[in-house]
Image (tube, rainbow, N blue to C red):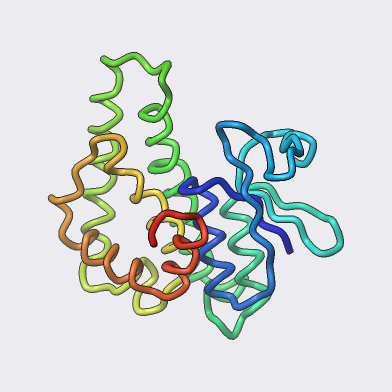
Length: 202
């Protein structure tokens, strides 16, 4: 398998999950600023959408969206328990989390990174993110991870998205449960390995 990623972007989530899975894969940098691979290849020739992540399977088929990619990876290694069994109530709870992180948090950060976003619109974006994170913080009370005691692919996604807070002036200090959770997730060997591979930590 090949994972196309851009350092620190949302593609860090499947990068973490691949390390958690133990599956063999090749990580290929596809910077979102240049859309050029190290060998000069135009990334748009690989993914016409131009964004990351993209997972290319050994048979050439490709998956484009992070929440789908991480579930695919999890289902290749069911013994790792990175996602509950398909058809179970818990699997739908996982999908609920992946959808919430994608639509309410991930997309909530997007205007804050966009240089074309009007300055007077950004405070309302930050307020909306704070409202959502306050709820996430309450949901983490008494849990090690989003799904309880078991790390799941949703944790890789939430960790990745909340990594962006310092870059947009979002203060996470009011969220003690979230901060403790981020410390737990950040200490996982697979998370460290993925972040080192992307040059995010030494």
